[in-house]
Length: 235
Image (cartoon, rainbow, N blue to C red; front, side, top):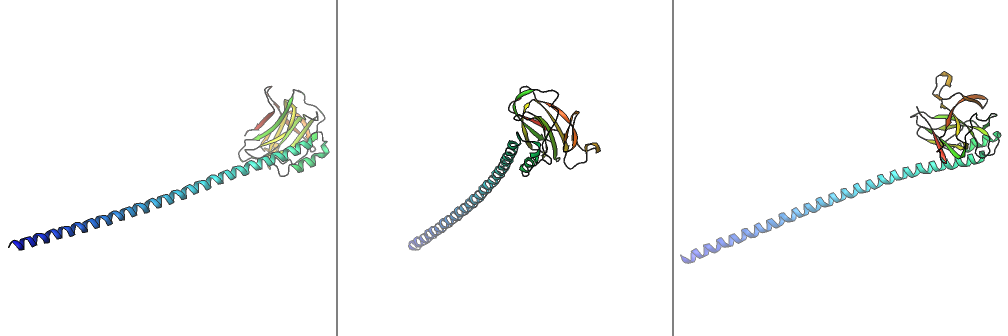
């Protein structure tokens, strides 16, 4: 009897050891699967993050390229304007065609020419050389402008234009040494001012341009004006 009891106990203990080993192996396998799943999830998240980072870099590069292109276009337009205006100073009205051609691909595209007015401004206000610019703040409305100003280099009064200014853009006109200038503007492609088109005109002048007289607004720059002045067309 004693031998049989010992045998049974041994069998039970062996069975317990086998179950324990199986449990341990199962636990190990489960932990390995969990570790593998965690690793796969981490890799997927890392791949997604890398893809997002790459997309962000591409978007930033696209924005930068767009800004660089816009800046290059503006610089090129400014160069074209400076070259054109440089040829204007000291030139006669007969060279207006050359001046107009130089602007053909620039930000400002005159449709007319320069003309020398016979009468000086009624209220001269001597100043240093001031670069006059025009700004268009009328959304969706490109405009054509004329500017009657005293040429800083030639010393006589001239009418420059037509200078086309796109909405939201600024265009150089030229340098003047008088703080009083005269400005006329009309919506491009619209009806005549007399027919109700949007216009910016006044009682100054009138001064002739391309065979027609125009009334101009008088613009007085403040004494504190530095090397440049921007006149803004508002709607």
